[in-house]
Image (cartoon, rainbow, N blue to C red; front, side, top):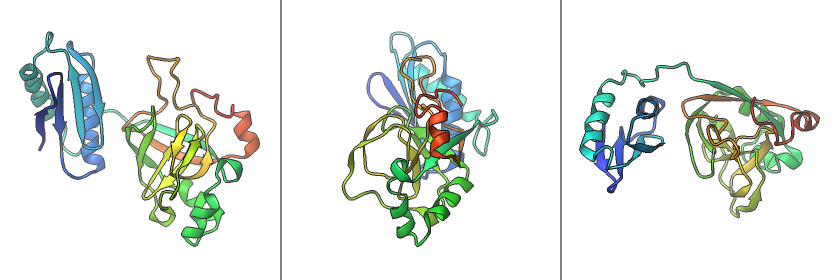
Length: 231
């Protein structure tokens, strides 16, 4: 079931459920894709369990958009609505050392060795629920509870682009340099956000999956050390 709300004169919101689940999120993403290219729709913002649709009232009214959304939402497939094969992104990560200053702390908090943390982190496949916080930052599901770790008590004033972190039961990648309080365990050389490519500025898309795999420091620099745009 879903609910539709007015979020002002130019925005409509669709809420699919109270809980966060992959099935609910896949419906959000499926509806988001169906709304692309419709005249009057300016922008869509998909989240864990809801979708915001910004529109131009002079082209399409709230009520017209509401009827359209209702029709499209009713036609979503049960069990998620995902019609396309989800994309799999394989992300290389240089773990520990200067690239992962908190790896040993995450290991200590969980009574593991750094090598065990890396093995566990690279074993799972992570679902991309949404992008947010900073441009292209992926919110991922699927972290093994054995390597969960709290946020840092004092956030760093600067976390480098490509840094891979853990906070609670989430893992993520910082696409741009920014302040941050996540436990940083490694860094990828891939460039997740490219503002010079307005048609496709983000490497990752919601609804896909990520697999991390370890690389050496030498491989990190050979792959570009943050300059690689497509993998």
